[in-house]
Length: 224
Image (cartoon, rainbow, N blue to C red):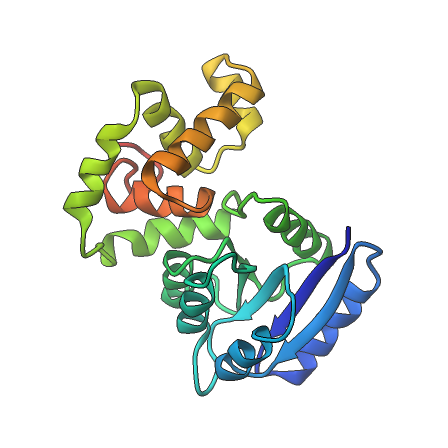
């Protein structure tokens, strides 16, 4: 199955570079491009896209608001935030807006391709140290407006599900969580699925953000 990718960046040269990398892959196709958020939203009305590579800082409509609008649509494409800056508050806002991951623009091509495939398959890119540092840095500064109600939502989880949620928020993969808790990987996957359903979350990135916002995981990777 070919992954249909859209490139959204105001720098034509960067889009050209990304397109060349993706075009060399047998399972990827760049089906659309846009130079700003307004153009991206317009193009998406008539183009089927699986994954959007989204720049953060753009004219007219930035990547955060564009991501929020895309993710509010029924059955939206996955969004992978791309930024020049390692610690960028806009990228954290992008994750809160519904993006499935965060990558630096100078990421090695192999890592970018792996991230696109991971996001497309339903996973989220939360393990890289850049994402963890970003969350550690900005989560305390961006409290949720309904933090108290989200705290109450955590009461829906069983003790085991809460335990799994903490490890997901600390960036562990299903395999690593299975090893840590002496469970099968399939069981961990089931727990993660139940966490998403009970809390009304879309993917693992939203699990991470909620865990930080509610204090279940504290900046620095510890848990409350």
